[in-house]
Length: 263
Length: 277
Image (cartoon, rainbow over all chains, first blue to last red; front, side):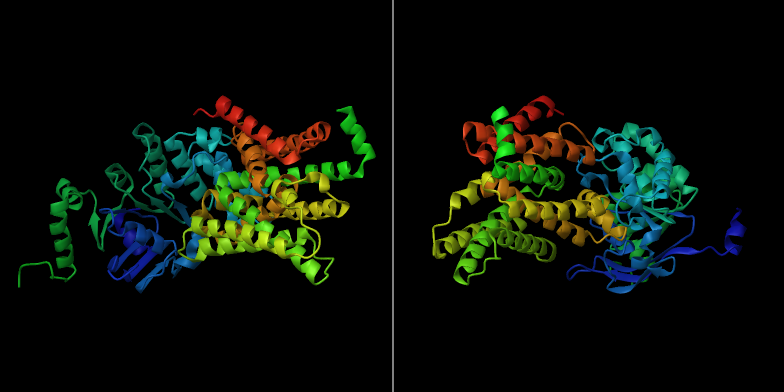
């Protein structure tokens, strides 16, 4: 599809966030957050720790409600659109000793279609396909504890794919993953990018450059960068002192001059 | 051994005890696996101790108000369910520390049980059989109650197996798939509570936790597949129950302590053999 086609064929907006504000206690965690993600695009959320990335993810998953403004997925509330999301949480949180096989984890993506007792044939074939898609078909019955970090992470992606999602949300997928296995993992993501809308929280610049169409810098407020990011921008986002200036300029462009010295 | 086999044919009490042991073993293996993987052993222990309160209350009220239907088994079930509900509610809906409430229920159950038994009119209550268990006191109605309770547990697990496993493994993801994590966590506590009632019959309050946790912990050394662990754990629990009964009949030793000693040693050996990572 050429660029002009993109404009003409009006794309469905998958994520629409307008003037969103959120706080747990008194201080705002997120303020005046507005952005949208059209269908088929992939957006990387980057920014410093504590900047509100995980909170934004929670809001998208409908696990928290915005205090002001709105956030919708596929034109519905996040709560209702949940069934269309495939979510890949950070891998750290799992009990590696849990007695369960790869395929049984993937089947959890079909839980909403499970009544009583066993999973249907359809569910089991969808789960098998999902595992195949991430290149782990051979390891379906392997215990979770026997898998490498990268394989575990791909199992989690397969579980999300078993939901047959229209939007894939990943929370720092390469954190705690062995760098040697990461290559395969990134290939999987690159393939998926062609098929669905992806939103990924990451610190990993490889992911940003490989799968991002654009980058959303989240630090209390948000602003968007087009790709590729210049080396200077990356430094600005990640190094402490320069980040202050980066954030000030962001506010400046959004019309908030509280941090500026000009009149 | 032949002596024991003869006794099974001859003495109804031994038959009842064996039957109750076999039926409860099915639940111990299954529920124990959940308790071990979800790491709620201490909740199970608190529930076990609260059962004494229920037993004491049922003895007290049935004697004072002449209520023959109010058996210790009924008191035990009610107390176990209330404790499970309180612990579940506190850990899900309040900010109180879970271990604090576990400790409180643990001690409250024991204390109220002892007081009720002390003030119950009539002949003194045989406290020891509740604390350390005495499966040889199993009556026909106990066997029936065991069948009913075990039936309830196994049916619930059969119906909701995958959802229970999912909630144990990743509560948040289950919730995102439309599963009420809170409901299934409470269901798991209820199932655990009913199991503890059965366990207290076999092994007594103090030793019950060992019989719930050790077969499953031993089994989990030999498989990394939940339902396989359950099957192995059921097998181990069966051997412990039947074997323990046979040996204690033969040697005239108390059943519970004997079983728990063997179970601990086997678990220790399995740990030494297969525990290295």
